[in-house]
Image (cartoon, rainbow, N blue to C red):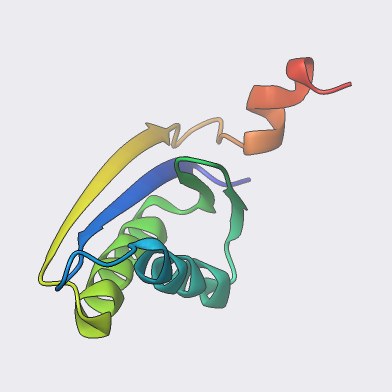
Length: 98
């Protein structure tokens, strides 16, 4: 079982004030190519996996958005870490699902 849930919201500054969605899409592509379990939500994306692996993905996301053209990026991150029992998205939200 995974030991970490990490939710991230990427807020890129765009060079000419254009729409930030293509930059956010680029960040999500990094998650998709990583192979970890994830869920995209309206305001943030949650990933499930090993803490070190997820933090490395966050780094790659920031680098990718910068390479895409953003010269300033805010990453708001929330982490749930349980090294002994593990943690999962499904378990945390199961009581809210029909």
